[in-house]
Length: 416
Image (cartoon, rainbow, N blue to C red; front, side):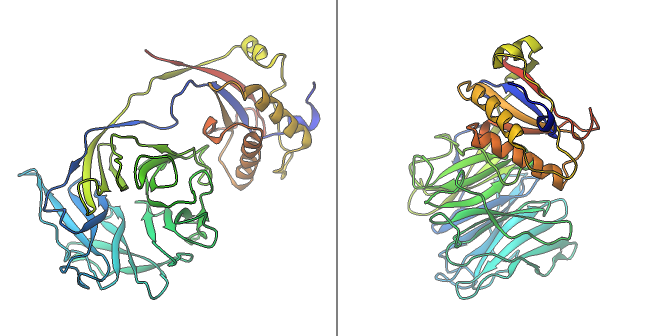
């Protein structure tokens, strides 16, 4: 078999790694969850905990209490508790620090460095026009300012998470293209400061059940959420999914956080403070939803990679494979020869579960490069390589030329 001409025109390096069972992102170990004290939890329902960067301010919502702005049968109020470092306890939560009304009020994002919180204010009678931000000054919190945002559906439960950097928003809602109950959607802020139309995250994450309470890790590589549609142990478990090859649209198969945090009851609204403490909501203790906390400890990496020799590469595929490809200028689609090459490589790797594919490229990822990357990656997936086995990596610099590609094999061994 000979690949030449068109096959030599592809703008990436495909790097195959032998990668035995090591997860994509940093794994975390958790301590036994502890229910927060009565200064935070009540006999009513608490949800949506978000913690400040320093771990000293906790924002959450409470429903079903006469103390709320609209009373017991109105919407949710924002409640705030501050941690007393002297007594090592959480102070009594109040609903007067941030503005509340008779609707559903919630903090949906926190930027402690800029002293900003993002809030959601919805009612059942009219669609949401967007969300709000408030900035804290020496005089206290400023007035809420509207951030116009299109596409927020009010057909059912609506949940929103705004990243601290204010560049990505995740939404849980039931929309016309939802697979069943609430699905997860994503919106990105463009260079013109406009937000993209919410995009459904697709069948890898969304099911015919509900997917709610999205939370993005600080490094923006891992999405946490709760679902009753993926295999779990209760009426809603907490899962995580990793971004694949630096794309916001393709995610790894969700992984259950396991019995360390999940229970046979309802568990949701996971949030993480600097990889050290987690906060989440569960009704494992009784009829009401309460906020729990646990310590998180990163699990040390246990893998090292070694390049395969040319002989090892040749033995893997059965003969010497031409591994350089380029795109012609302004072309972003694959030729039939390029697709044939990718399918050949994928076919050789299908039964080798310890092998990963890394798509490498030179220079920055512009619009054209992004389309080319998607072409190659989608073709690998169509050929049977699961998205969880594919990575994307920028070599930087000019390398052998912006449009040059090379296939490199690496063996990943485990350090004992």
